[in-house]
Length: 184
Image 1: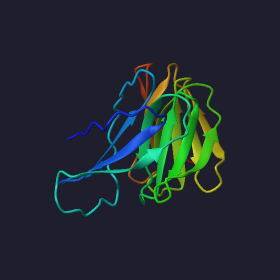
Image 2: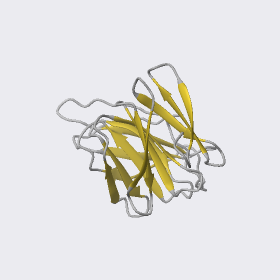
Image 3: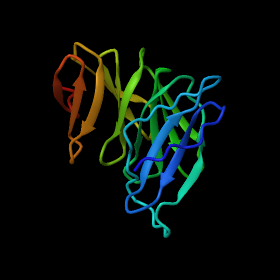
Image 4: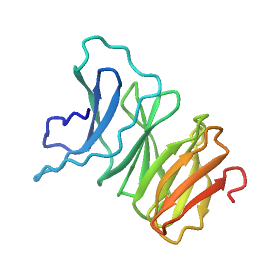
């Protein structure tokens, strides 16, 4: 069940929580003068929320800051941070409690298509249309490793359960498995 939020003439995106048996997070960009809604892969909040009265919707606020369309969103394993990626070539880390942007991670030269937190939550990986993935330290905000090897844009990433292997998918029709420690 996805809820289409009210469209408003503002920049940024709105975070909606849909309560029922499962908590879903949906995002839509809000643009003017023509308002176009884009839906991306829903993300499940790791801790979940207890709420009675299934089917109720609560608008938690708007996270405003990206200067272009959003591509992906991901929660940290403890649920305290939300990472977003955008066509503005940045990754932003948002504090869920304060709704503030804690960090802006820069370094990609093209659209950042996907983000994924490591299972431990200490690393965040971003995938770019320019064939690279960047591994970031959440604590220091620094890029620890740049992974290259795809011949097409990297569009999706996921960590293994232990967090020692990263899978990346690309327009080159390949899925690559990376040893996170060595970058190979």
